[in-house]
Length: 370
Image (tube, rainbow, N blue to C red; front, side, top):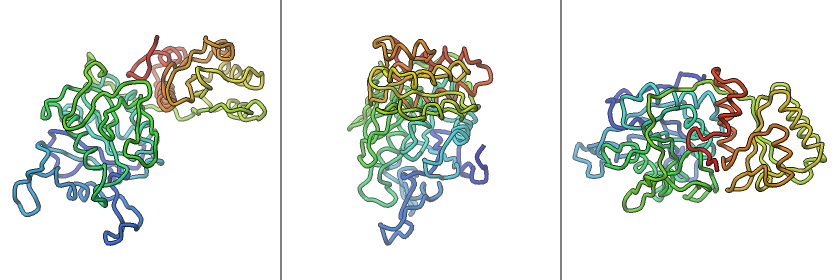
């Protein structure tokens, strides 16, 4: 678990509306010197973020009615603000537990998060929050409203809050972990970051948006998963000893596969194959994979392309992976496949046979089986 020294609920919380889980990121950053917009960015705490986001308060600083108030209560919970490159399994567990602890108090949840690893966290939460029946919307920004007049932060935040509170907004319920960015709500475990600078930073290559936000917010009901039967079940055990291997011309000439796949602590590997699932038909490639699988390592193949799916039976070069015991990842993103491995391998109730079976199944909308 991450340190709890900076974990706290805002003392003004009312236990209604939407709970924001605040982790920092660009959306919570402002120049260290407000008079110098080029000074290094620092993350402010939740109280300061809220104070500088007037739409979250029904009244302005002078006590007058705020005409731009979002219209419902927004509470806050702060995790230690960090650059998202430092977020990993322990942090995912913290976020998931906050949501589970408050599940019956709020209409939905918004997680403010840095963009670099947002899709990993979104994917993790989709698998950890089994039976989720409320919106969990992850968002962030490329430019913070705390330091830029022109920004994407404020609209990302306000639209996410409205999606997370269908009782107030009268939008259809989206009982999923989503990523909202630049007019689109994407399924979290189907999304990928595609640019480091543009406002349209995320795409969902193989699944349509769950909602579009222009002058109105329109939910694509046909794309949204149905409300699950039963209550929320929280998975909190994550196996970190997994890795990804991206294939490239010449990998058969190096010892990389032997070194990585031969690690005795390795539990799972995502094979990022060419195209529809091919890898070099070379014993120096195939044998280390087969040996790892025989040793108990769970291997799953996905495409390294930004879209499409693997069909391991389509070409002989891919069929060799099936023969070696590699699981087809279908159209899963590399990020979702990696995190799914971590969550399933960490589940103490599952053995390796269960993990391999569930990897190939759609459990949270992450893949399409044809």
